[in-house]
Length: 212
Image (tube, rainbow, N blue to C red; front, side, top):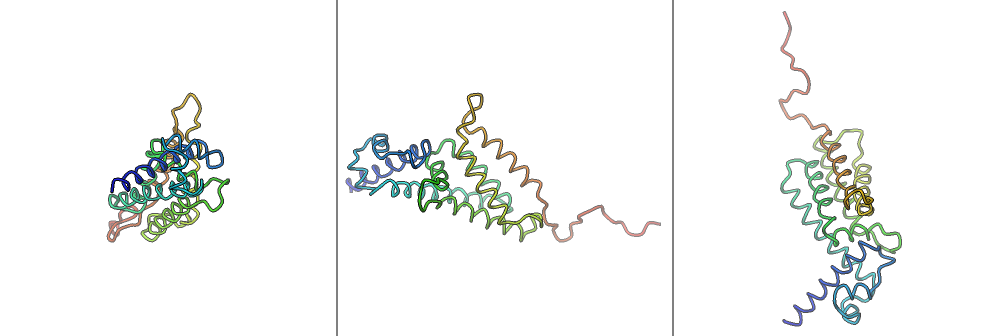
């Protein structure tokens, strides 16, 4: 039991250290010796848990996806409408990535062109956003001219893109300031989306019958 607990701690330390390196340097520039040193373990211990850098990247992506799934499930439970759920999810993701390297690295790895077979978290995020927007369309929350698939592509890639360059705002701005700007823009768009009229609700000026 003690060995299992120690192994689990070592694995978590490696995933966290790898996430920090992947988030800061990207996949191509990340090196296993740097990751093992940051985790405080030997390279032999690293290779005991992960056969290569890609296996470590997959573990980081999986950890990020688990965290994001828990996040959107909370938003689903808290929200009354699909667009409220989406707004909640975007807000929480953009709030957390500045402080959580695992989530930040997972999103960055998903769009890293230097990786072969990457994209797991990005694909999941796109599919979740698309499904939410499909439900919003069915509920009358989304304008008819807006395609759920097109909007999902724009929102999911924009979130990933903001995460990617969010830490490079310039010396006059705090890190990830772009995330706040993007979040405000997206939330204003979601808030402006029309809502389906409820039974008995009058959409325009009330008609009081014939005037006489």
